[in-house]
Length: 434
Image 1 (cartoon, helix red, strand yellow):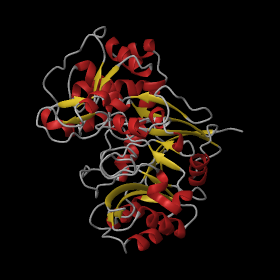
Image 2 (cartoon, rainbow, N blue to C red):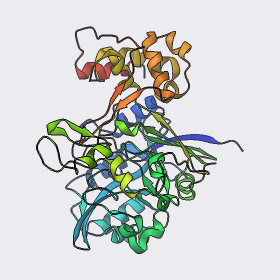
Image 3 (cartoon, one colour):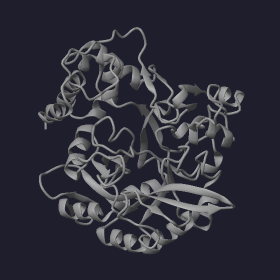
Image 4 (cartoon, helix red, strand yellow):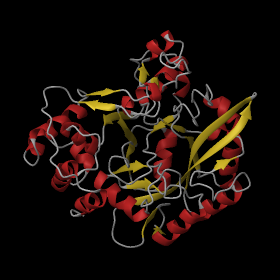
């Protein structure tokens, strides 16, 4: 049987979510998804009435797939109806704040979900609304609407607003979802963890581990920085969700993961004091900042260590694998020696590589050193290969600070040449190729 490779980022946001780019339109999402190499993305935020109206005005349901496509143009990118919600509730005397991703197969079921959820909160307040209901109540409402709907916990390990979060989460999936756990088939690893870290908990063996960007802008260093890769008979809602539910490595091939150290909450730390600590170091200080003596923000690695019942080198069999990558823009920026991926010195080699190889994932996973070096400076090609094979290092992120890519002394830095191009000009420069 001929199978189709589907690369999907199933958790993003629209312009009505807090801290999201005002230019986050569906057409821009599709444009940059194609550049990235994605062919399936979530719509984001279908619970927000203004965004849902844009979805209806901009996208057209595709016959018999449960997906949508841009009404104008011939983009190969398809959309899956998706939103994220926050539930805040008390459990055994403690306040729990959990984010969940919801997938649904058509606009009719999206409308029905919204009718149900507006009883628990103001859906117009934010693209990611806060609901005054428990996690089990949420799942019960969603699954009562349609058995084809899917719910899974978002960014499962971040310190706040996650199922295993150090500050307001749970220790098990069952404690969170209770009698509705039977409807939970996956959890989202988040930027600060990857499948290998989650494999350390035997209680998670029954769940698929999905990876998505949770992006708030369409730039290629945000959208698709994490994604899911499937080989399917066709690209449909049911084929994708069943591959996830079954956790079938024949169909759900692997996830694309940033190095978890790159995530903003990988290590324990305190941003204001510039304190970043590994789990043993944090435990040594009793999770108290050695500078200001306040409580540290517990990192994901330490939280995993608390709950794990397996060693750090444990590897699961018969489960989808994963590849650790970093956004191409970030790699180029590290070679140049700049903190910003949004300058002309980064866009120029980025555009050249995309023009040569077609999309970013092809560059990151498949292009040879020699092929890349034929069109860009050798240090850029070397850096991509180092990240691909795991020989580049990442200084761990902590307390809201992203990790930093460390390439090593064997790659000479290429300094950017002034002047720096303003952001609007940068956007036009990349669009010249599309």
